[in-house]
Length: 317
Image 1 (cartoon, rainbow, N blue to C red):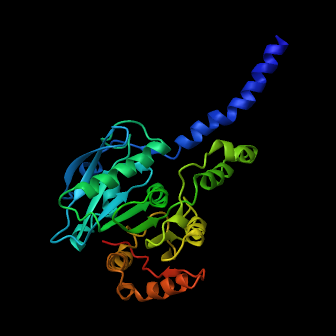
Image 2: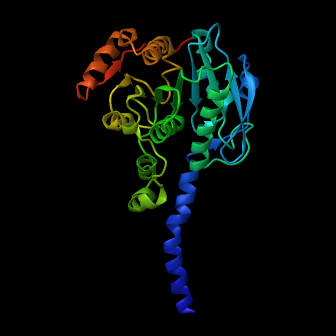
Image 3: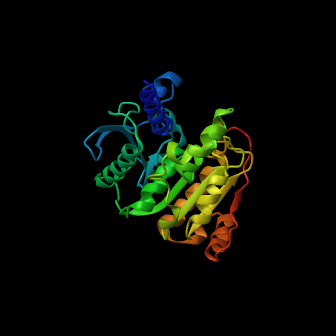
């Protein structure tokens, strides 16, 4: 009996990190199936679309068609909670500015089938990209990849690992620099237990399929982060910016929280983003906001300065 107890104790110690790893990696995903459009009462013109992921799972999405002739198409990768009917508000203004938008739910979110996992969500993003380029009403050579939070990290992983045909720009808002780093930070926030588990954090939160910003160049990269973000600290975008090659820009939102650039700060951030899109699609840096033209030149000269985004704290109406 003593021998059995010792064996079980050793097995428990060995298996605990694996059990914790399954729990911790699953905590990156908080899907739901609520219809926020119906609950909140807004209405956004869209086409319901269905996308086959790499393994055949059916993903649900919305295609928002540009008003007039499309300047380009944005594939939007949303964050880790809720579903597309809540996240669409971050990009619903883009069609009026001349951009198609594809926003789709990862597996397990909204009407999409399956359950989320890191590999699955990554493959879903691949499928979204392929679907958007395949549409007859999309110019497949004028494509922009835009992600927020988890979606931003996923966009940086996808653009860094794959040679995405037609990719003209990458935008990551409030993204984390690695799964392992954000995992370690969250573990330390657990009272008492966090300090006991921290040494095991490399085993608890796996590093695979994280952002690869250094491999995105020469495609223009824009990073956005609020300096008061308590969900993903702004130091993550600092790390991403330092690792990336030019052309690259970093907007720091003074007083901004998590993914607030195109919510609370939209009146200032949206026109500046459209200028970045114009630059990325045309190659003409003169189309950038003046502060971004300066920062782009500094980044090309291998400096570590970034463009600070001076924005109003007024909540947009």
